[in-house]
Image (cartoon, rainbow, N blue to C red):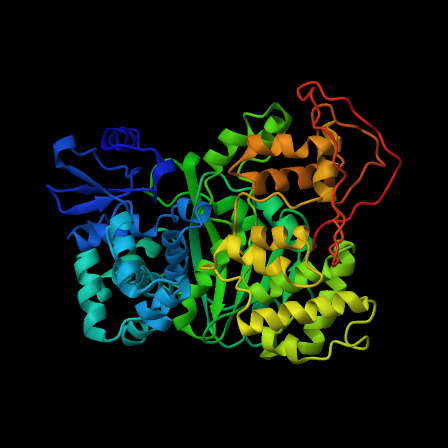
Length: 579
């Protein structure tokens, strides 16, 4: 994209490019998102920079009207797997604040100097500058969402001193921390919400119990494009594990809650379906809501230093940095998926908040139904999970750590009903995560991780691909031999042998195609072109069994008449969905 194309996007206030680049106005010293509703500046007064950190490092202040520092992250960093993308994902998770720039460089396998050169070349700022911009954003969230003393906010956001905190906020926002907080209070009063930024837990209030420790933050997380809230909650609720997750409420007013293990302590996340459906729109002054919005969540932190990590992990869980426009453009161009894409705009590919949990779920979900996998995982949590200091409704534990799983015998008495080979696989995977042979963090090299997983006994292509899709957030994965994909294609009248040929047209968004096919397979009432209406058709996807020698799909020539497929009905069968 050249500068003239960028300027055309700014003139059109195209929110699809929010977070992709930033508009810096030299006549005012302010930088904006492309969709800023303010008057379009003259072309000769505009510079374009690739990141908010680069804009602030160049001396520009964030626009108070469009708040460019709060845009969704660029989808490019999820799509790419190179060292810059891995570093950006780790910086977003707060690694620089916890381990410093040398720790970040070590994680991606570069020297600090080499990494600095790569980041500056692509983003206009180094690791320290990117982390500084993120700390300022975290501080602004705390100032506007909590009543914490300003001194505590400075250290909770990751600043080394109160003076550094004050100077950074004043430089980036042209306001003192106190002025930012006062402005947020005035905005809430104008909106009729009162002056207090946070309230007591609605769950605790309804039950009459004492609210658990930790202040509740009401946040609105920005996302790009439409968001399929119902389908996102369907996916999470069907897999909710007792002890670490809790669901309640009827359709349209469901609540999803879960515990989040974090670097310093833990947090509790809550998503309310009715609020998400009603309020997932843009903030006042942010331009058209057709191109993006904000998802309301409740977050209760035990330690406010974990806010950055908590927000980023929730964003990965809900896939909020995705680009649904690019996905819809590619998948909607295929006549086979066009109707599915139209019926489910903004369908996401959910990630994971804990790599150990993702790995254990993938192993326990081999060859069993969703319900069975949920039961097995619940037993594992009850036996080896870390108890919360006090139960929070139905939430009682954090998921077991890799060290706890690796050290546990995992005998039949711990996980009744789980075959011995699966217990050994779980033990092996936990050991590999504990000793670092396998990494499933945001900065892991996806190709290297897949090779390391496949080298472990009991891990086959399906499990490796599923973990690459969920734990590593890869948007371009087609799990090998997945029966859910076959079931979805069967509803479209396509034979499994044609999968590889079709998948080539879905790159680089195959993970989203997988979710569309899973939805087709799981929803017998969903209209699909050339689909069977037989009520005995498969209702849930099933993973290919992963053993030491996994069974590969049959190798047959690809279908040649793709656009006018023939429906091949099969005998009724039960198809299970990945856990």
